[in-house]
Image 1 (cartoon, rainbow, N blue to C red):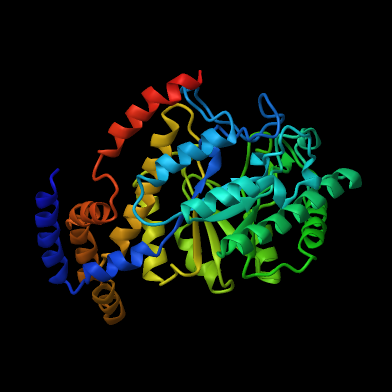
Image 2 (spheres, rainbow, N blue to C red):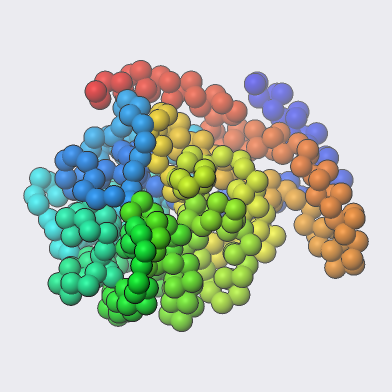
Length: 421
């Protein structure tokens, strides 16, 4: 599509939205301040660079064997740069602890330091982006039986507590060096596959472990702690220690960020309604945006009704400054750079659509009890020309419009990815 056509369509869309009192330019200015945190693990199928070979335990699985996955940190950074070039706005990187670089030296997870991530920090400075961080409580012999922070063996539990302490310190240094707050998110796979007798005991152990991890004061301007629940995982179908209710209580009591993952609840449940409820009691939350399909939680994000509802809830509640948005999926059945780009652009685009909504009129209709007009306007708005605004936003941000970015992905696959073997 040529520039003149994009600009003409935008002018017409701007006029149409203006009829409802929507300031399109204000909406795009707001969108420019929204950052999405790209998850590093989409690029290499959740492998990391700690060890060679497959994951050591269950609970994390990327399906597919599409050629070209990143084999080392330099390749992963190159792939991420390609994705960032397809996204309007300025975004972030979400890094797991197993993506450390040690120069070939064996470093146990309870001994990791910020020096093992300095190349990532230097790269983020070059890209002018922020970073978020995650302890890695899987793919390790001490997690092979499905328990970490709630393990009944005190020594194993202590190992994972020390890993968490180390990761918080790293997160603080990341935030300090980059000048933007790092969110360090804790997720553990702990749970049982079948009938569970003692559900309280492991949760008491998890509570003690978290208390020990968070005991050390950390500058909140540099690092914020988040805790993430899950309904079930592979190998913990019947019982997950870190349930939503457990972490909700812990987060409220200790004023930690609660991480709501769109794929970590019942398939009929959406996290959109949870956002305003949680933010009554917490200053900030973390979102992991994924797409659940039946019982698998981590498909590439697309413009589903659930995603739209999440974006609408954030914007309608004026929560953009209180919600940290990150992606969380891993699909090895398609080009990994395409997967990243599809998911990230879907999130950014849905936030734009929500920003273009005539919220003031809708709120007035609701308050006055005119629910018929409210529903009618919501439905009519679904066919408004948001695509023209999105195309113009991409154009003015000097990123590809429409599917033009796929041409570059295909070239990169031919010239780079296919040669990785």
